[in-house]
Length: 255
Image (spheres, rainbow, N blue to C red):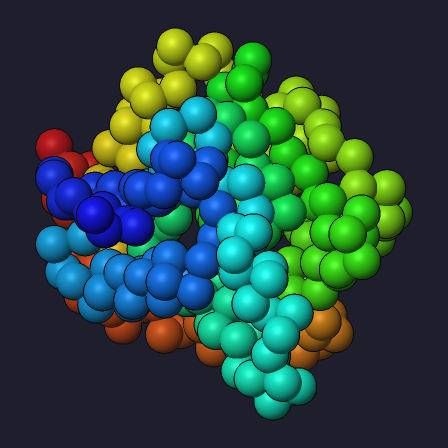
């Protein structure tokens, strides 16, 4: 049985973590599969939006116990390579030119919380979704996701979550700015599909350039950011989508 399943319909690729018996915990195989599928979605013109979800009761419960056992036995060089594989998988979501939506219906813990954190949109069920970075409880550290989380919610609340290792509700995650929205559990799938269907109608080139900018402007000075934005503004004007969009708008205005 595949650890990850992919379906594509109406421009929406749905990637389902398929280890329900292991609460969709991350393994070497699942990390590699996610990385591969995100790269495929990025280059597939039939895909305009990606939805990431989990089978069974959990979104993703962090690292698999067998995986944790294995990494504790790796050499320093092997651990660097394994850590890089996790980083590359997460970065493939961040760098994907298509919007990525996490549909969180249950616990998203440790690496699973990091997985949700790097998505562009996170829609969570009010009752069963839960978020937390539990790594320090077992002597591990949330090293890679820390970089993303600090950018997303700031230092103060990142310290609370990463050092405190507390699990928080979807409502609290939304208040902190970790996730996009909270909906009733029985409406989650409908809400995510509605969001994906709206995004499908947007310009692919415009969304891709906007994501590129959102990733790049962190750490830039105001002057450097504005210089970069000016260049990107000029680039966007030359895209076919922009030219068609302006022509369509002008034609509709004449009517």
